[in-house]
Length: 508
Image (cartoon, rainbow, N blue to C red; front, side, top):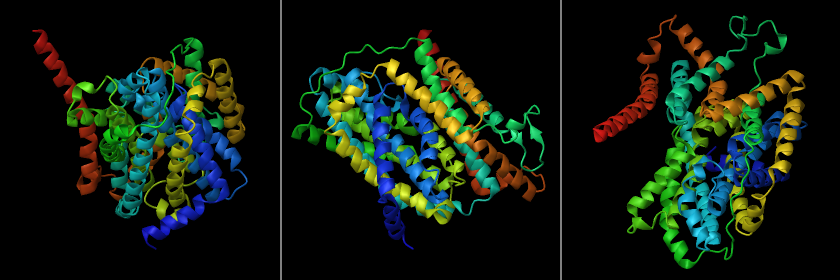
């Protein structure tokens, strides 16, 4: 079968009434999650995993996995759309990748051009979504065919690269990111060792023999962590919301935005494919590129529509690009894709090169649903801009109890143990403490998901080589991945040291 045949089969899955409904609910909730400051796509996706598990409980495994991942992916790219709304209207980014949008978006809103900024963000996001999906369709099959030739040594090195990439670029401090990675790997070792049958770090508690449940930790760290932060820091938004008058952009706005949207889409897609780079980096790069290419760079920061169009396109394209390493190689490139991977593993579906062979309904159904979801987002976002602006004003006293209720009922519905409820509370408080002290949570989640796979592939490789560790450097592809992993950690360190030396020299 050709790629087009697979894609048509994917559309047959995506056009099933329940999957159209799941895609619609996903993008709607995703937009709301992006609009509400502080929640972000990671918390939104983690919070909805138990909900989707409950909704699809009566369905066959393959169909349940397809429907669940369609909804969760909708939340992911929907949040990328919604994040621009608070950046433009409130000067408060809905999530980290929308930070750059505040620079010119809020200035446009102050000039009475909030509607134009929001609609250009929606149009740019739609174009970027389509560009990244075309890239996904073209690259998915060839990449998974290449990955089928990977042995245990190559897989170990590739997963190590994924961990190093996220650790090298997550948070302000690389040391803290690496600590979180090691912490995640340690948590992943809890339970009965699959090879030797020995209980590890279980302290003779039978409940720990199966290990810690990924879902409980993800919901606790992100969703409940945000609740603790709001309660303990009495976090309230008092920003004034800019008025929205004319919604549609002018012809000049469209003309000025056309090239930045295309440029941001391609730049964001290629940055998104790199593990660890993510949407935040893509939006910053796009903003710098637009400023460099502009004939009037002095306009940036004063309400230049290019400063909204480029970064918004880039962060949406990056979210589509991040799906490529997840689906074809089984390597999540960001915290949110790690949570999506954890959701698939819950249904005993392993993302990676065999996903397209063994579970085409899930893989192609997801890709096709993203075309439909992006169209839904454009139709939703343009006329409902004023409605989503109202969501920003939702008081925290109503929002927090809903998040707590979904967290507790959702985790209990999937796990049926009170232990997981205590673990959920503990992870919520831990998530708050870690985030407060600038310890990034994404490396921990990624390490928790990849940990067992890294261990299994390392053991398989060492079994093949009779315990000889040189197998990881004698295999050419494995060596390339290890060198890339080292570079991903060392290069940012060298750049930081170089920057420090320049500052010292300037002071002297």
